[in-house]
Image (cartoon, rainbow, N blue to C red; front, side):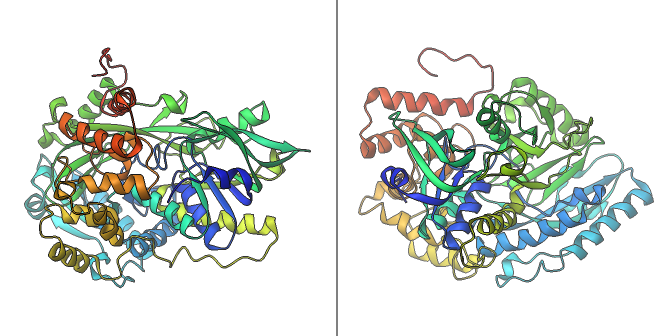
Length: 550
């Protein structure tokens, strides 16, 4: 998969997708599979923002039951099963415990009724060929059994815990990337680090976008019969710039931070109610992800970050509701922030936690006088595939041509193994006995792993562990050659797991930047610039930056 800027500039596409997060990736995949001529462009890197900076869950939305959003819950549960089937290497079952403290019969009965409804709505949770992907129903654990399973929940007033099941993404940025890859396999043109600057207009109709390549500064036009804006938290700002005034469709931005700490549970995720919301303790890659906050964000999307006060406040919440955690600032190995783009209903209540996660497809020809332009806003990771299906249905109707039926619910992604995942891991382990971290690589790449290992050639060093995360040098070569990685940040934070558990250390970063520099002919200044840019991922917002970039 490589950028073809010449093809982008010389082809008239059926559909131009602006935005390479999961929504744009899913739309591009669906449209390309149906036979449309598709282009997708992203101003930074694929899945660099909201699509990566989340709780890494594919879930049915248990808490949406309290708002009686039964349709959204059922849709989410159906889509959860689809992701498990089409990407079993990247989406896996995750058991959850919901402990009850001083709740009494009424609280237990209410939660039990909600979980019973949740199980009923997920009637198809076992309809999967891979037995390792099938999910069980909920059950009640006594206090003794709950503590035996996860000692962290022990505390005053513990009555027991409900055990239920959802699913987790191993690497959301790679799951989105596989959707882009599948789109390219089916004829789409894709390019990251290509900014859409303005819409191309003729007689009130949008005919594509003027774009700028981020490294060279080169400008050209991409022409398309229809254009879809899938820009997440930036969507309404882009439309406002195009119109010269606010759109009638607005977003509310919710900021959520996550902390990565040493493992706090043995194998089970925890859901803890706080009175004003909830937070998770999620086992992930031998660590725990603590998430998430949910606060109204009024700044520009590019300015979002994690401050020391954000971390301190969240630590206080966690320790108040999970005193056995004894969480300290020194335990925080990594942190990240993301913005949820929520559909603004125009109401006075700006409580983002209570706001709906519904999605909306907007035809700007009807409301803003921009014929030929659509926007897909709101929604959530789990339901992004179905939002894409509805979006492409509408686009196909607008184009008026004859296109194939949607296949994205059944067609597996490029990395999905044919065998059950556990069998696939055993086979790869037998074939690659010298690689210590083979399950990690199987999770990241699935059936594409042999192609990754081919990049190592006859160089044993390319198969050796490069960083504490368990990644190897061959992944960097593969990212450059086959996955459109253009920067050190692309590689360290999204193509691999090198930086996803926090700063991997000087040795790992020096080796990574040298490998990239050798392939891409970077000079010393470019190498240092790449390291400086990457370092921002490991600094709190407002931290002092010294002149040497460290």
